[in-house]
Image: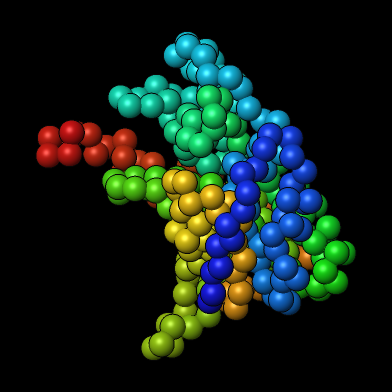
Length: 238
């Protein structure tokens, strides 16, 4: 798999995202995936708010999330089926504003894909909108997929056999977030000014229809929920 980050000019608020992409992406190869950071998608939609007081930010977080719970360090929130700090609101590289998450990343990914396909006459093309997230009990951020189009986000191994002939009962691979992590690693988190990338030769299944719920797990079915609720009882981990 080849990941090619692309250096661009500074993206401005309300700038047209498709026009911007066409300036910097040459005709992508068949079965390529165009990666776009969610920050410039949000900027293109005007999803910004001037930085205000702590109370104003807390109110904004609650407005932007489905669930908001105060913790020792941040407001932990649930939005679009994903756990994240502060409803994904970002202050980095934001020029004195809060940048919110895009309105509907799956819808936007689909629209971008269709426009790029028409422009470049490419049959199999993916579009992936990324953000950064932390993992529980791990330092640093990795990439995560907010939305995608043109490929399946999950590879299912259930019913298939392993090296020794044993059938998988539960295994699946999170393709979308894995691609997002690879892309975010090369695009950078600082002043690299590489908000887009192109992935080639990725081991994915290209398809027209995407099921936007395929990566989600209900809270009651998540294997970590009970674990973390009980972990604080152990003094070593307090």
